[in-house]
Image (cartoon, one colour):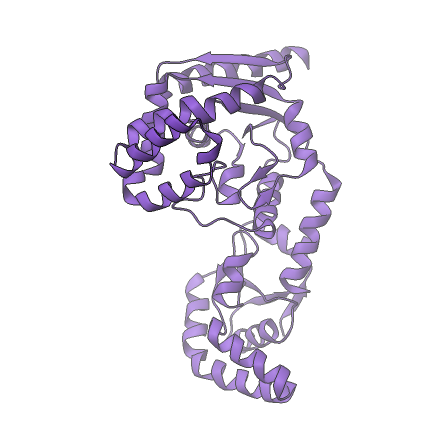
Length: 351
């Protein structure tokens, strides 16, 4: 007979990599928010879940259960085969640790698969995430990457990961790059998904001496960064990246590829058009319409993003500030590595 596990027990299993977490909810539920690291093997499709929900509300609980069993029984061979292919013990969960996860765990147990069930489902995990954020405890010092739009801060974060450094990529957690154009080509995440990804990564880096992070504002797309992390960011070591505008334009074009979705860029521009001096706004709009994206990006930087960023930097703390004046993103990364080494050595001397 399968056993129920608490969130704490599940996290212990996950940390030891001795267990695979399986979300048996529908694909739309999984995409909205799940436990990071889990895989989705749904018992019902979105349409089937809606059908069963309608039966539950309009007919009876018994009718909904009967229809659910009818639908799931036809999928049993495929469901069991998918779970067996994973090759590790499993912990299954649904929304509240109810009928779906109980049925899945029972069937898998009968078929000889080592399986457990998360008590309380993803709702209990969500409550754990909320509690962790309310504690507001994250011991590592933060090294904060700042710079004008297009300075390659996210690129630098990803290169740091490849070198083995710990990071918190808030834009990745948000599914948004943080600007008015930030969601183009991405799927913005809701607050639940952002919180889960943030706490998951914070737990991984809890015992690190320092963690790299971008100098994000409170809101990134649809989500808000928790206050304790913003406060900690303000007290961190701030590194300001300066690149020539030509290099910034090149990096932005490489990231956004506006020629792949020109209509989306023009739509986003319309939302900020009124904030730009009329002749410049007209020139940007014409550049977008004629696919002169390099010109449009440079004008946006010079007349919209750079002035806004220059104002925000006047409120940055002056202590623990470091400047990197680079000619390219490669140069900036080499300087960042050298600065990081000097910060490590200074920390070692002071400890």
